[in-house]
Image 1 (spheres, helix red, strand yellow):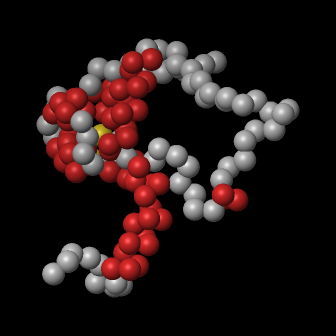
Image 2: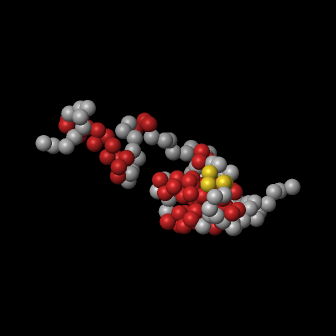
Image 3: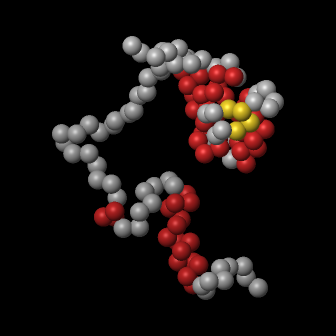
Length: 131
């Protein structure tokens, strides 16, 4: 017996496979209809716009990246939480070993209000307020 979907037949499975092939391979635009593709910039518009972020006073660029990575695997809905819960959430979200190692360094039993609180406890820098 051939493996397939139980909601439709093999014919529809093959059609869906062809339609999503671009998404899977992602080597080219993935829209099925050409008219849905994003239009290129006009003559009076810049072609390559790069977003450049600044580093807030009191933090190094590496710290901003590390704190952002930490926040990416925790999310705001987990707070307030103790270190063990944060470690479990990060692990469930497939955090890299570096993030898990940082979270293992948190003192046991303390509750954290947000990522900034966790970051401060780990010894990370804090933004200086601008006057």
